[in-house]
Length: 156
Length: 261
Image (cartoon, rainbow over all chains, first blue to last red):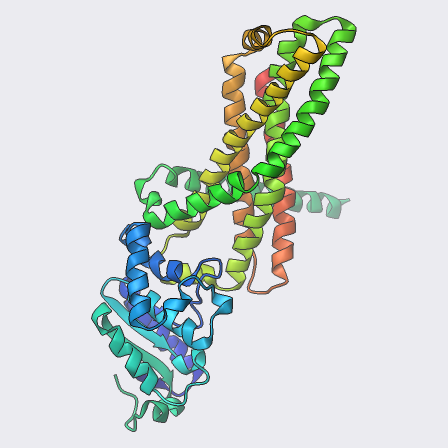
């Protein structure tokens, strides 16, 4: 986890991090919304279809399994505007996890899940995709530390 | 006087720079169409969807227009030919005017009105919603994923729909020929085949391909010019459609020059 005092500092460090991990970056951020004219499963499948040339059929089976694992089978055919905040977060997380050896970055997750009280939910769903990703990093403001249950200064 | 000349100069520079940018982007997209990596699973899916939206969904309207247009124009042509007694020119008129001029023109107008405007708005909305930057973040090449499938679909749809229009038109011609002249199908087809020229056909296919290429490429370029503001979407669509119609006129004029000179 990385915590920052100001918006400028957070954005600068996030930009540097993105540049350094460009090829393996799996970003979950409001700055990287879902493609609105694609259903959720296509948004997630897009990464593997494009980068690994995975066939439509194989991609559909893979994504259906992943959505089932997350308990989100019902959102496969939904599009971005009709998703709840939680469903949208799941879709963005799975999309990011589709990057090969993904360096997962959660950019201010409480900004996406505005109704979330603390970080337990985040840790719980990160455990669910643990086998799909290589690393996970959270970028947020220092004043949100308590919500993650962190008391020490900014740390990795 | 000097300011007027300066103004003309500015407009000329701006226009030539815009045409230059469009042609250089067109060259990049055109070259990418021949690269294998442009046809990954994701891009193929976009291509299939685009062909469905452009060539299949439009079919009922397209066939309706082709039948109505075919009935009216064939009726007029056959009556006129009969009145002036120049039946020898029937084949040349149908092949040289309808197949090479009318079919591509009506087809490009229908596709431009329906698909070009949709592509323009779609790309502009993606730009405003930051979906374009999402693709860049996930290292998805915009030319491979967004542009090549749309442009290729434009070319294929134009050639297919223009050929279909000609086929419907000439089939109605056959019906009118039997009713007005009382001639058989063999005589009608023989007249058409004798009037068909391979060079004309090649020029028509090139013209259709050029129409398809530019009426999809220009909306993409103008859509990408949208800013992050919602109000830039109608401006992008408006500018795009004006440029699409300018391109149609330019291609039409150039193909006529090639054909007749």
